[in-house]
Length: 252
Image 1 (tube, rainbow, N blue to C red):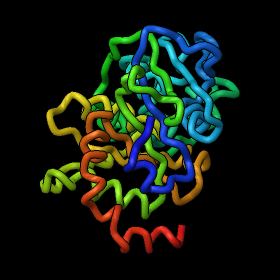
Image 2: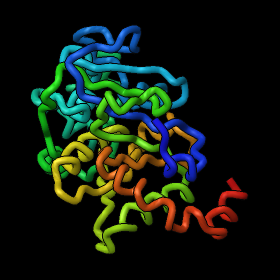
Image 3: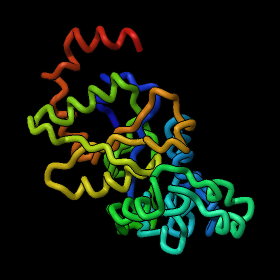
């Protein structure tokens, strides 16, 4: 699928389409059923860098955060996520064995378990209507895929352009949001935005525990596909066709 917007950005990493479907892709990457070891963030990066399709099902969506972020409901139920994200729990870590190394001390993203639980309760949990959620590299996405979201990996200059273009045809200064969540969970917020009349782009990949998966200057901009089309329509008359943007690109 062609895009003047994405071409103008000169991205180093390929955007990824997030597709809801009842059909599993042939030869797509996926986790083993009932495994809690898979990392959805790693799959997202692999789809971008390796040009590979990946797909997920409720029974094969990796860790609890993975299933939650993909839109398979609240997968944190029964899991001590409030401890993991804050001050940890040595007793729970011992029960988890080798898989509990991070649980002992906690990731310290929140001051205490109460604040972490407050964050969990604020997430826009959802149940996608499809059997599968698919990550598809942009160059493989077709109009027939009808992607729900597009995840764009961008450096500071490219992200700046996306933020400007998000409000280019609106003039509201309310077209972007940047919530803290797990590395790929901007997808969950993207789903919520896609339901709105005037959706916002979601800046993400702030998860310190997963930042090593991308270059240090990279963040993500997750945008509902209908919003990407809105931004696309404004490219020709925008700064993306002006000298100032072309000059800025010389340092990339």
